[in-house]
Image 1 (cartoon, rainbow, N blue to C red):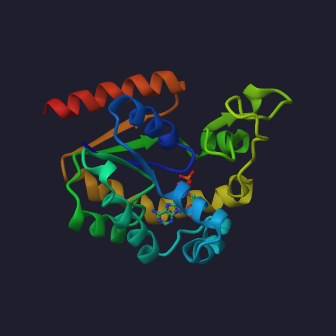
Image 2 (image 1 turned 180 degrees about the vertical axis):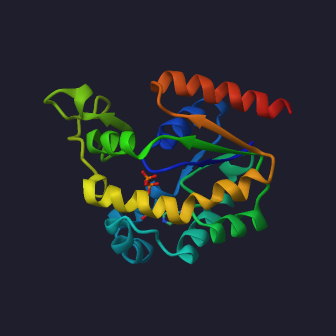
Amino acid sequence: MNLIFLGPPGSGKGTMATAVEKALGIPQISTGDMLRRHMREGTPLGIAAKSYVDKGELVPDDIVIGMVKERLHQPDCRNGYILDGFPRTVAQAEALGAIADIDTVVNFELSDEIIMRRLADRRVCPHGHGTFSAAGLGSEEVCPQCGAVLVHRHDDKEDTVRNRLNVYHTQTEPLIAYYLKSGKFLSIAMEGTVEDNRRTLMQALENAAKE
Ligand code: ADP
């Protein structure tokens, strides 16, 4: 199954993609994670992307499209994949449409107000062991899996989040209309707990697969 997860930053699409990866055994392809890895390793792609990511702007389409094309050719994508954070522009969606058959587009819905609150509280493991709520951790902000000190992503700071939401509304939200026409589109409200949202999503994906 080839899936696209759409939605504003902080809507929980990454957490849901991790859950679906586990449940269905298909890889989560997070362009945000891939870009951050390139930035950490100081590759030419990472150096080119850094100024955009730090400001909460979109990295230019040609860079991201090239990176995703290469990733989709890897053998672990043969039985399907979950695109988390791609496409984010109509140009990216068109480039993807030329190389892939998408089965379902899931749109995750959450208000800007809740997103602002969630991202102020979000902490991530620097070794990729997931996302945590600072409020849920108390004073010990360490990864429960590896013990590393958790970080508040530089682009999760308030001003940058505002900019990311702006970018989302102007450049990514038009993809809802773009994919609505395809008839392979479903929307999930993300106000609930992670477990509630996961159950709703799995049920919706099962129903979509039957159609
Ligand atoms: P979030 O979904 O929480 O905004 P991501 O980790 O998906 O966070 O993305 C972080 C940043 O990486 C974005 O603000 C943007 O700069 C860059 N990025 C990720 N995916 C794309 C994409 N498909 N196109 C352009 N830039 C991207």
